[in-house]
Picture (cartoon, rainbow, N blue to C red):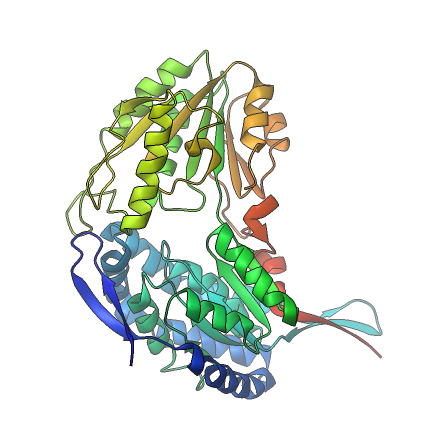
Length: 444
């Protein structure tokens, strides 16, 4: 029996192991999920909502344990891990109610009703950077819609998933929610199996692979495929507010966040002042293991991701970019707060998602230049504009699923949606919840 070992990225010490779900075991797992779906789908929407909400209340006693595992497995500082675990659990009942409301049948006229029916078996493939929250955002609407779910978590965070699912399954009916642990091979076997939908958050390359493997069965897809989010800082912006956002967004979760600010285009007239203030604020961040007090930038999740960040920094400095804070080489497992300026379109830092604590800055001479460079990417998840008069007009021209003016993207009950190659379908909001269901029109 093969096992998957989880390591603390701060120390590379073993945390624990889980049993790998082999490709040969996938058909039986899916079969039991199909069987569970049949009885789960016969329950009313209100019954499913109540059961799921009760299961999430059952998570409350292990909230601290989940937070600690998030920190141990992917390196997130403990305060942020506590926010992730607490937010997921404490918002469970509200989230379940919101989903049930979105999936309630609607009367179109006297003779016609719009219904949202279960699809069948949904495979949820979740990422390591928000191992609880991102999995939850896909699992809960799938369950309440009447589907059964097989969760394939990242191989970087298997223990969080195991604790989460095992605890929920003390309340949920048998096999309505199951786990498939393993690496890419396990995920591929799940995608090509006899399931009905794949809900995925991860890389663009993995998304393309999933799409190709799901094509033969015409399986439903909801995929969030990362981003390379730009920020435009206009000459009439509140510089201090822009600096606060730029640094916080670039460094959040050690930069390992899909909507982290990756590229900053600042008007040349305020560029020097902006950079001085960014450097001053960035110096205040403390890097270290998750369990040290006052740490707000933890380790990079693994050696591969660490090297990717260094490669992008070294490419930029070789092509003329200037480091204002930090270096282009750091020993494992940390990347210190880094500020670099003079980014140009031919640099990897501009072309690709970095996923590290790096503030990458470029000056622009005209707003049309800034808009053009912001849009020159296959990604289109989020985009932000800081400015006064004219900022709304700039925002309207940005090619992203989520655009914000003088604040971060998302929030409230808005959908989490990407444009271009950052998204295929979306989740969150009433419209997003309905993507986990089959629309049926009944006319009588």
